[in-house]
Amino acid sequence: MSSTTPAFFHPDQLAFKPAYEWAFGERIDHPETTARAEAIRASLIDLPGIDLRPPNRMPIEAIEALHDEELLMVYRRAAALEAGETLYPHVFPKLQRGKGDPSNLHMAGAWCFDAGTPLTRNTWTAAAWSAACAQEAAKAVLEEKVPMAYALSRPPGHHAQADLFGGYCYFNNAAIATETLRPHGKVAILDIDFHHGNGTQSLYYGSDEVFVCSIHGDPTEFFPFHCGYADERGEGAGEGYNLNLCLPAGTRGEAYGHLLTKVALEAIRSFGPDFLVLSAGFDGYEKDPVGGWELTTDDFETLGGILAGMGLPVVVVQEGGYYTPDLGTNAAALLTGLRR
Image 1 (cartoon, rainbow, N blue to C red):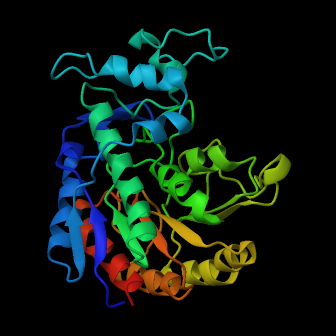
Image 2 (image 1 turned 30 degrees about the vertical axis):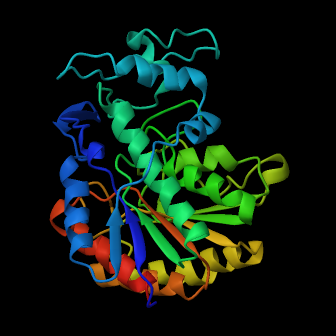
């Protein structure tokens, strides 16, 4: 690929700084730090052919179209928290929709599915600019006719559902990109994050217009545990348009590449998309603290080359990846492969 690749990031994505999370009853340093985005941004600046720029505006209308009003009210209420104040949902009632009070942050757990995704006064701003990066990357593919664009979306998004946040995710960035592309052709979403993108699956589970394929760690062992299983194939009109491919802990590049080329991409080709949205997580990396595979930096470049060979315009949306020292290198490797 000889053209310049647009990449998008807004500095206000660094305003949100969760300090810790609760995992398996333990308080630990939060893996989703600003250092993640800063490492990738530094790597992009040094990568030839990358045009790094800020998105133009927050896509409020697109966010409102995908996410329920009550969930958005929770975020807006959190924006009134005091500076330095952090709220962690800790009560998770199964409320009938419309019965909770989203203005009462003590009830925020009614719109959340874990104890590791906090709210601060800066959550809305950072997450909205993260979504803006995804929308701008999709628009760049459409308007600038480039074969690939990258969204440095932080916080990530693939765990965010229409009415639930969790997994460090608040708005579903991959879906924002997908909805931007859909008026112009068929879209397939490929999620390569180590953890199943339950939010993305839920948003398109009943649709035959978007094909969703996820390659992830076995959910019997790994987050989000409650979904991501092979028998989840879609429902109604969407039956057969959702594909979950689970790989065990310790998976290496050769086995991963075989599943990608022989199963995932064959299914995507059968769908016949005009665009590919890639939810790009790097937590399958061999040193990642929250993953369980043994993928190397070279594997990410190889993966990018394989996807480039499909000949589809690609919108890359950043998801997970928590080994900060090598995160920028791994992102650059994937993009280098995609630019072949």
